[in-house]
Picture: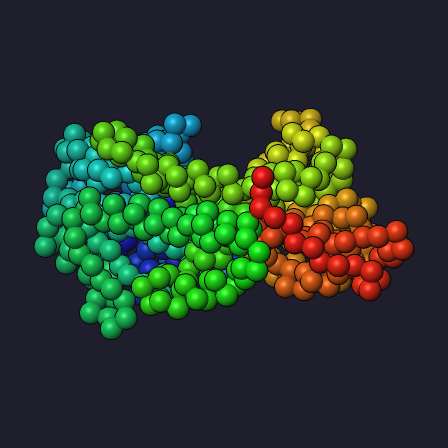
Length: 482
Ligand code: UDX
């Protein structure tokens, strides 16, 4: 089939690349010329500067100029293409609604091209990136306004998680197609022919509005799982003695009806989707005059979770941040990405600075350039001058009074020994990702340990205490948050 993918970001580029693997002729279009030139070079480094996904650059290089073409001009290909996938970014407005400016610009441009089509060949316009419920209908009305003929609109939402785009596209859990006519369904079946009647992959055909709603309900349900575990399971283990968080998870999720995904308690879920989608859904339901209590609670719990450990450090551990130096490990919203959108680290830094810390010593294996350039630029806020960047976890920890672990990078797992040999107690370790399975040795050596999903453990210190002298230290659990 002849397919055009409009927008070549995190949704569009992997989609275009994987479709080209199936032998479709795919034209990936973007208005950004430097981006298109980077993809067209076929060089991994250039491609990854825009979309960094495992295996993606290889798929692009293999299919480049055979099945996959990059362009900033679709005037010609618009003439006889079968399908247009719309993968345009729809950022959030301040009130939670969706900024449709780029989307509307793109579809108006497309409408003008399609209105000029001479052949009366059917064309299907498919929304792929997350757009508010009703956008397929909006797309239809814009095409009608421009006099486009013989077209159909559809919704085919993207469910990929970052870092898994290529594998996820090759082996999705489900393909959801929302379209109005059997003819359009048939055209989309040809795009996804290998997934229709697949034994494992659910191929669902429904209305465009249902498909749009499936995306929002999926993402908000996933965030609900996380907020449930952070807001209920973790809270119990943080307040009551002798509750083992890992066993609690195993015991509960052994029930086949209960998801294990989301039970990893953390200092809040970040990323480009969850926060944006739940706010948008709240906005859409409010707009429809419906109550949104559950969604607002889920969102609120997740946002508070990002500052919660710092609050616990103040109220429970009585730690005074004023003039202290804090090491911060992890800046990105999850491991294996440099993406910091909605990352917990943003709120941790804000909270630390507002409490008057003297310095923040940061380390992240991938996101430090991103942090310096786009998030903690001292030109935007002079307080960001208090953040220094270091080449390793141990360098960041050196000379600090407390440590905060914000991202679940594997290299942070089991840092207890490194902490012991680098800094001396009194010292507070705030573990937002439960990365220190060996925390008992640390506590025994006199360090205070404050994990998400667990009690504050005080490393008891007495006068004869020497760092590393475990014989003098005792573990003393401290009670609930007051
Ligand atoms: C998410 C959805 O998974 C995906 O289906 C959707 O299309 C886009 O949003 P992504 O943002 O890439 O994907 O990240 P994901 O891996 O889901 O993690 C989101 C956040 O939740 C991260 O900060 C992660 O660390 C956190 N998380 C995840 C938890 O805190 N606990 C968990 O159990 C799982």
